[in-house]
Image (cartoon, rainbow, N blue to C red):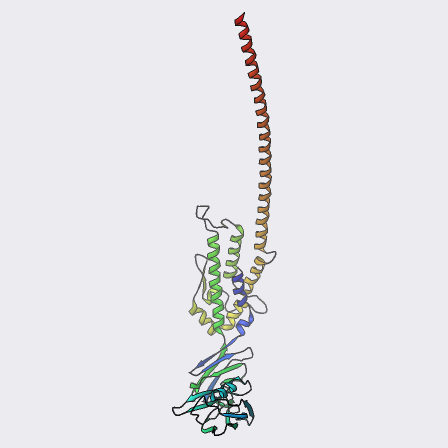
Length: 401
């Protein structure tokens, strides 16, 4: 019942019908929306995507050779003109330099080593994409004597901003995550989007509405199955349902069924059958997905008014929510039935206890009576033996005389 109540509450929530979803036609772009988005259609032409800058050093033959002297450092320059200096330990190898850079949270680059077939190069990649964050220069200070290590300008790949047009408006973004260009919409560009023209549509999130309607049907059918099992009549007390013959269960089923099939308001959609939801002979619901899709596409407002209601009338979900509240509340139908059952159980337990006491009392009384009877029988046996003895003595005297 609680699961069904949650499914009903979701359909009764206005936010479900106000949500928007973004769909993209074409490859290389995904989009997501927030509550600030508005419906709209957009043509997005991607000139190129953003990328991080990179730069490599000249070759080092021996990767384990010490390269730095005392007070050595590495100076880095970025596209926005900013610089950073990274201190290097004396006698650091190319691997040590790499590790020092990667351990520095403010370095602005990640370092790796590539062997190009001739020697080993230190390769720097900017941690962020975009022209401003791209590394443009590296300069080593206080290298060990005889060491020639510097940048190889021929390997420089400049950082680049993403460039795109949205409905003819030029947009640049340092990242391939484009936020704020379309209010409430976040665009995610894939490198394959470069040179592509794509279509973006922001519209009502019918998929979430469809999912909520489907969930209601599924949970209701699950509830019907559970109630059917618990009220099953099998002719065998051991296998019969726990609530067979329970009036409360019948009332709950009847009330929920009425809430589902009774007309709602005076809108364009007044019956759940118009949404493709039908009540089957076994009491379960069946959903015609094609019919629901058609209503969502052609008249989403009528669907919303039927399910969640308007300013004047509660919709089907609102009506169900009220009924379920009366059933599941602290003083509701189910709690009252539970309290009544608990009262009856307590009464039976008291009767059982009194009966046990009565039986115990009767047993004690009978035991006392049997004990008294045993005593009387014993006395009678004693008297009988005495009389038998006296008679024997009299008989003996009589024979002597």
